[in-house]
Image 1 (spheres, one colour):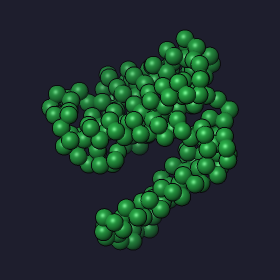
Image 2 (cartoon, rainbow, N blue to C red):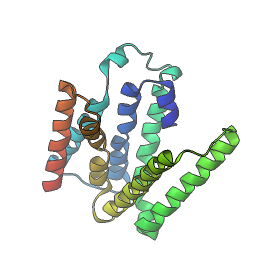
Image 3 (cartoon, helix red, strand yellow):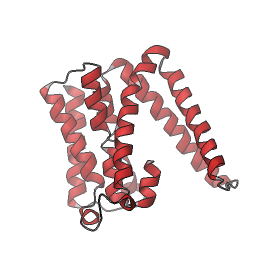
Length: 207
């Protein structure tokens, strides 16, 4: 659903909404897992969330879009935001029951099966990619699986709300990668967002 939202709408609107799913993860963790946060942790998480939104949001796209029209991708992004928030909150249950490694394997295997069925039902013609693309796909799949594994390990030793806040700060890495590799330039808003995320991560790590 998230990919469909990106396909329909503008990344500058859809991405910040989808990345805000950490709000639901933290909210559900506090309500159902009875996790408690100190004042400093709340401030740190707030910095991170604001930074996540600002680092990818494009206010020009917001002004020029029909936000509540399905074609804008926003309704689908909102659903994606909520569902991802629920998913990362619920990871705590199987991780506690069967462990982080087996949970990660089942989730990744399930995604593979579901994706295969989706391609079959959609009757999409899939051709064998070239060697270079296979390498890229392998790298993406590998790091995606490792990221999920480390998230699952993280929530065994710390609160889901804390681990999720740091995990969802990943747009920071994407921005820095684009700056170093593709020589992309940051605007003042993005510099401020990066600063907020970094301050939030540092504070939440030490307090």
